Image 1 (cartoon, rainbow, N blue to C red):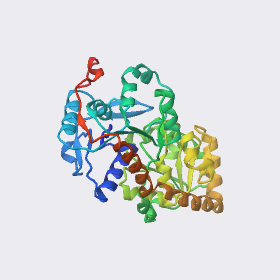
Image 2 (image 1 turned 90 degrees about the vertical axis):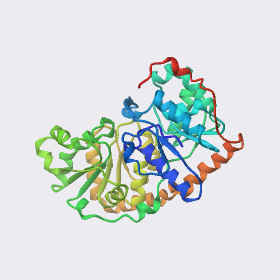
Image 3 (image 1 turned 30 degrees about the vertical axis):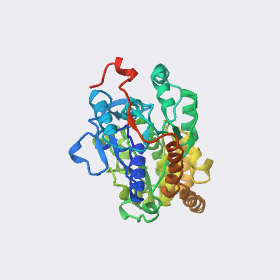
Image 4 (image 1 turned 90 degrees about the horizontal axis):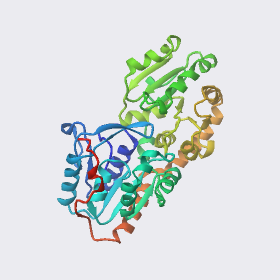
Length: 383
C-alpha cells in the first residue's frame, strides 16, 4: 500500500490505510506500507517503510504533507524492486506524491483509491496530461463515496466502484463515558481546529445563543493546533466556555464521542466522506452536522443526526438548542445511527476491497519495476 501523506500527521487517509493494513495483516496477509515520515526514528509500525520527509503544500482547502522528488522516487522504486508484491494499492494517485510515483514506476496489478471530492480545479486540469495516463494505468479504481466517484468522472472521465472508509466497530462500541467530557451540557468538536474548513469559528459564533438557552454549556475542542493563539480569536466573554483538550489517541477519541452530549461537525466543505461521523455513529453520539453533501449522505439526510445550514451560525445555534432539549428525538436518531454504522465495520469494508484485489490480480502475475519514463521529470523537483 502507498500512502501519499505524512504518516505522522493526523488524517483520515492515513488512518484508513493503517487500519486496513493491520486488518489484512491480522488475517495472514503480508502487507508493506510506504509513506512520507517527518521523523523516521519515531516509526512504530514494523510494516511501514519511510520515504523521506514530507513537504507541506495547500490542497483542497487544507494543507497536504506530501513527498515528491528524487529521494521519494528513489525510495519508491527501490521498495517496488526489492519486494515480490502481488499487487499495489495506491491511495490518492492523482496527488503529486508517492502514489503517483509508484503508479508510473510499477508494472502489474494496481488498485487506486480516490478519497477526494472537489469541484473541477485549474491545477488538476493543467496537470491532466500527466495524470490521465496515470489513472489509465490502474487495473481497478475505488472511490470512498459517490462524491469522490463523481469527482473522478469529472476530472478524468473514468469510473470507480464505491467502497466507503472503514472503522473498527468494536472499538467504538466498547468506548467508555469519561466524566471530564460530560455535564453542563457538553458540546464536542474534533479536528484540526485552525483549518477554516473545519468550521470551528461557525460553532463559536453560535455559542452565545446556545448559552442563553443553556447557561452552563461548555464547548470541548479536541484535536491538534495552537490553542494559545486560537483562543485569542474567541471573544473574552466566551473563553470560559471553551476548553481545549489537545490531540486524542484513538481510544480517547472513542470515549470523547461516546461522552459528549452533542457532537458537532460544522465543516464548511472539502469533505468527500465524513469518517468522523461514522465513528460518532458507532460510539453512540448524538450528532449535529452541517448539510454539506458528504455529511448529508452519511447521515441519510437527517435520519442518523441533525443537519444545519452550512456556514450559518444562526441555524447551528437553533438546531443545537432543539437537539439538546429534545432527548427523545436524539435517542431515536442515535439508535438508528448505531445500527447503520455496522455497515462500515472493517470486516465488511475489507471484504469488498479484497474482492477488488481479486479482480485486479486476475490481470497480471505480480508487480515489477518498469522503466523510469516519468513524464514529470521536466518539472522542477520539490527537493
